[in-house]
Amino acid sequence: MKIAYTKMHGTGNRILVVDQRSGASPPPSPQQLRELGNDATGPGFDQLMWVTAADDPAFAASYRVFNNDGSEVEQCGNGVRCVASVLANESGHRQAFTLQSPAGPIDARIDDDGLVAVSMGTPEFEPSRIPFIAAQRAARYRLDVGQEHYDACVVSMGNPHCVLHVDDVDAAPVNTLGPVLERHERFPQHANVGFARIRDRESIDLRVFERGVGETAACGTGACAAVVTGQALGLLAQAVDVRLPGGQVVVSWRGGSEPVWLMGNAEYISEGIMDL
Image (cartoon, rainbow, N blue to C red; front, side):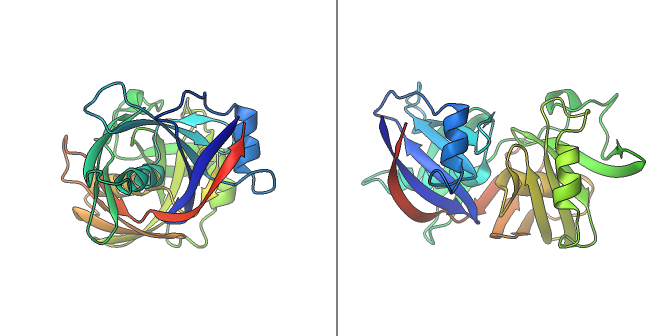
């Protein structure tokens, strides 16, 4: 079966958008996803966004998120910006609409400059809902790795995140400590691991080891997690520029039950056909 796709990137995060709103094909199998996600055997991607018709007319579309290791995850901030851009580019489509996601409703808007803003929901700090194993909620948690101990902030942005503050993101042990913390025993569903340097109250540097992917050029939910945990500690302002290896996004949150907003680019790369 031949399926059309649009390849895009959000802040360097490679996204494959597959529009199946008028089709009924099942998503690729885990093995197919691994082959498609590998540049040597497919178009290559970090995440694949499988877009289908929503079961509620209040939503413009629904989507599922798959990593290039074959796993399905709850959310992808850079991916949903790409989905929103594809929908907005359709003739006569609204510049603001709501999408149905595994993590809940997502509002999206396309600004005049082409940047895409998406509401990523309310952050969840309660350990059992992240999920994270802890006796009680805290601002930071001590994670033991062998004889080493790390102070980490933990939050869910529709998917679990662990955030460590570092003095230098370039020197951070992203590819050694990242995979260890990703599968730490206190994260029952594993976690995305962010290494953040706070430059000032309105800007941070960030690298992220993504669950099921490894380090990527950017992680939208990781940017949100780094900002809201920094805000919860009183270290960051309401709106923060997040500098990632692939570029920059802006994360804003008013606190409480307000949604976190993520703004950044969604760039077209190519189109193609994949054979399933």
